[in-house]
Image (cartoon, rainbow, N blue to C red):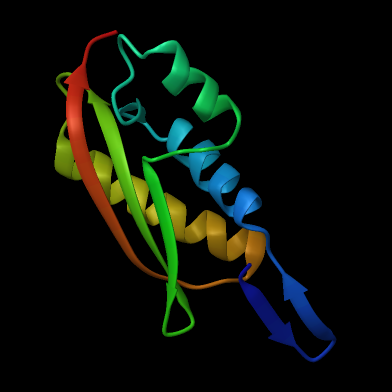
Length: 116
């Protein structure tokens, strides 16, 4: 559990909250169809995603900053560079705003494109 220390004490941020925050932010980003492969998803993958377990998001702490790796599917026809730049900016802003934690590195892997 990542912790943030200030003059009032220590604040712990749960891993589940961080994963939920990243998942929500990705879902609201223009041009992103979803995490990993979204069409033809198996029931097991769907159930695991609903339970909060995701192989498409990895969060580590390095040097006091968060390091995030994402696997996403983009919508066919969008500018991939613009989508990833927007996603990285939105993730950094949202996590800083909601938790006060700094994001050092965001790595985005494009798993595919979809039109559904």
